[in-house]
Image (cartoon, rainbow, N blue to C red; front, side, top):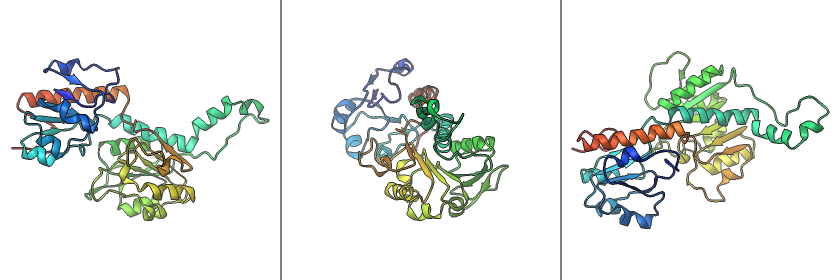
Length: 317
């Protein structure tokens, strides 16, 4: 068994022993594209997080029997050629639901309360020098009574809806397949959601249909007081259009945990856009979340070795 890029899952605070108990295990912290073939050669079980496994690599590994992705998204693997070879590819759904939903509100509360800004201000001495007993540097926004618009209503979208309702927010949701409403959630078309929501939070998968879902046209339909949050996938958003909307005040603010290229180029427009929070794809990374991921990876490999693979994204005969 070979892990090509284990560092982000386990930078040292977790334990690989449960996986190592299943066979001979080699863990690489990181693997460049040029190193993949050499490091994967001879492996029957190959595990990757973000290291790409294209057709040329998979076809060059005659001993390969199983590919496990240490994440939910599996676009780094050419699943079609794996299926041709009879190699199941598995992922890990659901492990980060609580952590990602929590991060959505960490971002939203920073956009609305500016906690970091005001803490820095007080620590810099502004409160000590103030003639008033309190002050605020930017307008503060109360969430109760506002409308949360959730694009994609899977496990994470549903968790965000529950937290939204706890804050006293109204909830809209847009889904690919029409469905009946449920208590506290109104299902609407995508265009209506962008027009009505005070906060739009993205939780849909990245597909050909959803790439650049948020673009100049969508942004122009939003309220000027609205916020956009993306903890889904970077290419859901046309980054230059969002930066323009922030610079011109078309919307009030945005927060993203994902970008179209990661790590981003230094000139990515969102890194310099006003009223924009950028976190480095860490919504999933709470220790408890990573432990669930680790446990699920072990169970995926166990199931494969037992001849009954689970969480297979490319069913093979």
